[in-house]
Length: 151
Image (cartoon, rainbow, N blue to C red; front, top):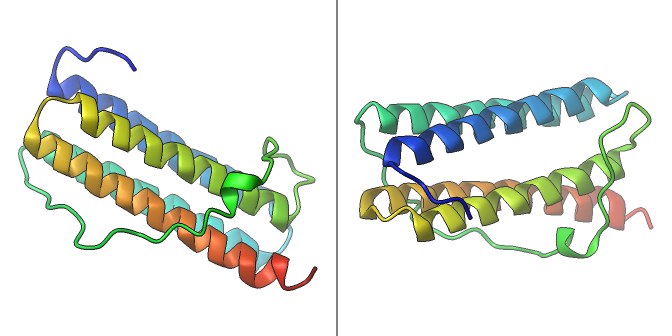
């Protein structure tokens, strides 16, 4: 992992990462042919902007506490192969891609927590890791409910 020169540098990196996550889900929403599928991804895009705002607030000096509970991990996404987002992508492929993205985000924040060298920031990154784990869980539940029950 990259060596950081300051807490501000770490926060800037995380802020950019959350913007990219928003853009990813917003783009994915635009590729869905059913309105309800599109809305699911638009909601996730909005949540990623919420994470970005929290990080910006922390950078501005506000405090943010860690999550009370750890998110359950069904590990469904750990065994699926993800494709790149495409206009022809069906709902199953989109869910797989989203699960993989959330797993990577969880790992990113866990690694940032381990390497940041600041106890308060470590708690922030661990809380964000749990937020990303919750996102992955929601995609896994969706996958279990709508894809696995159809097969």
